[in-house]
Length: 530
Image: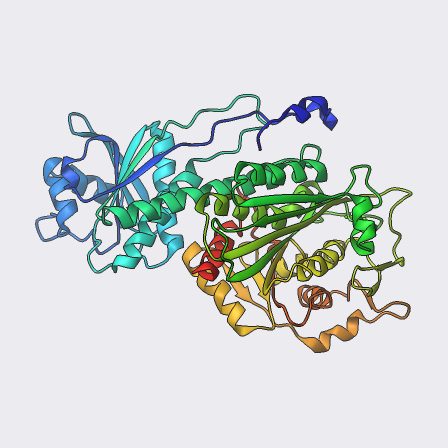
């Protein structure tokens, strides 16, 4: 999040301003060179437990480790034996060396097999980032001890995932800390995974996607007193103005939303003193020629108190409810990345009904009936099931843009976190082909998704005595009934998929946003553009 003149006039509650910090600028290059020749701060070698096997003379059988160990007069074999380093996944060990071309040699454990998944290669990058941070290294090289047997396509994806893992591993969001350390790491060589045009292009792509993921993280991490619906709209508009060759932005205020009869969304926004902003970015490819129109709809609650059904008690997590715009962050993070990548043949609408769910005399009461923009009426039996009320009008609006496919993302239900745990997003769609598209995209991005059932018989619990439907249906199957609710607002001619990402939006251990969704969305759009 940058800084504009408008920020100087606006006084934020608590007088907090994000510092403007430089993002990590790391140059990646792919090389085919002899590892022993490399010069720099850290040489990191990723090893499987098979690579660590030694012959009867305690010498490595793996040629790369063998040649390094000879350079070190057997030190590598000794240290790995002393420290019981066997190449288990997640194990690392680092040696500081005098008088060689590189100051440090690191071993990164991969487990039993040379990995085949993006997530595992991203893990190598994260391990390199951690080692580089500790050693304050300004450059590093990464090599797999055995890269033979890896297909050319996997080599490309591996190089790109290592680069992504490194960038995201080095990045720390320190905008709200009074002092912050600068990143030292400036250059990383990826050795043995190919060189030349194809891999360089893939590394450029990785850095574009990372810029989007970091932007998404910043939006989610920013506290709700700083990131209001108005500021979220400004940040989205900045994306459009930065890439004005392919983007246009239109921001609707409450008055304009009223004309479009968005009673459901405006009902949620009614209690807050921060006005709602309905955000619509449109990506049109350079040179026109649109073969396919898509929409990405993100839930954009910049804070969720629960409303009159206020979030109370231990485990209600009200103190991290700044994350309730994680779907919007994924949408705008993807928009930023696509502004840099500029795919052809596809038009994409990014739609977010941004607001806060607060408590005041002007707010919705439990039991109120609101009317959505498609004319359907909703009895609000719980003001804390508000995300779906905002998405209802956003989905109707998206269908009116003439799109073929819609993916919506929302930190929608605690029920989904109970079902799938904190690191897997659930998704729902009546269309098998669209489900496949997201699965394929997620396999390349390395993010975790699981398809959930749209069980129509559960809709019975969503019937109202006074309106067309209620907005929540009891405790059981809460993520399913939420998805069924959203389906009421999607035109039957439009292919629709809903992602419930309440779990993976946030990393509890790191107390920070993950940027979840961005890289999968970018992959999905690119697959639709080719």
